[in-house]
Structures are given as C-alpha cells and as structure tokens.
Length: 126
Image 1 (cartoon, helix red, strand yellow):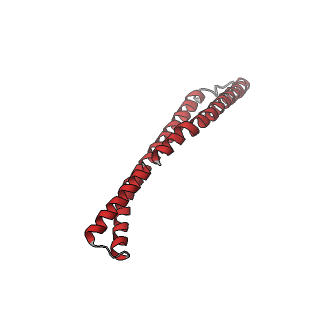
Image 2 (cartoon, one colour):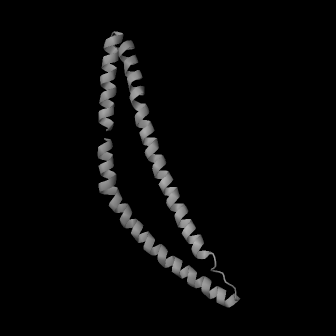
Image 3 (cartoon, rainbow, N blue to C red):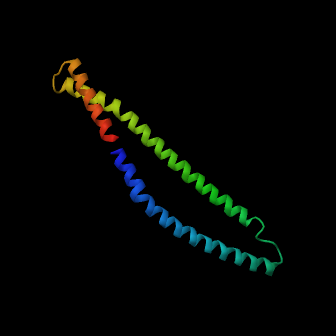
C-alpha cells in the first residue's frame, strides 16, 4: 500500500501539482510587475521612494512560503512514519489478546498467530 501510495503521488499527483504551480507562478509574476508599476507611479506622484524594500519583502515572503511548505512536507512524512512504526505493536497486542481471550488459544500459539498477523499488516502497509 505504501509503495502504491508513493507511485500515485509521484506518477499522478506531482505532474498535476507542478502544472498548476507553473500557472500560479506566471500569474504571480504578472501581479508583482503590476504592483511595482503602481508603486512607481505613486512614488513619482508623491516624490518619495515607496519601492525601496518591496523586492526584498517579496523574496523574503516567497522563501518563507517555501520553508513553510517544506516543513509541512517533512512533518507529514514524519507523522506517516511514526504512525506506521506504532501500528505493528498495536496490532500484535490486540490480536494476541483476541486470540487468547476470544479464541481460547494457548499463550505461545496466540503469540505466533499475532506475530503473523502483525507481519501481514506491515507487509500490506509497505
């Protein structure tokens, strides 16, 4: 399942996201040029330099957005890895308890069956 999810993200979602991101970047570039033009017109009317920190502010904002998205992606990957690492012991404990209490198996046989079930869950996740 994890391999299928990675294939879906890389093969299906990434081209769609990149294509839309390229359209947004082009639109943002036009918007920035229009805003700078308006600020230059305003600064010529008021005889003040209103565009002094505008370019550095835009670049700083873009970098902050990139860093935010990167941290969000790393946090999501870490959360998925943490969830998958915690699921195997949870499945083992619950299936062992089920085999002992509900099925009436011995402790050794229930442990072996629970280990097989937890291994199967790990294989399905991968």
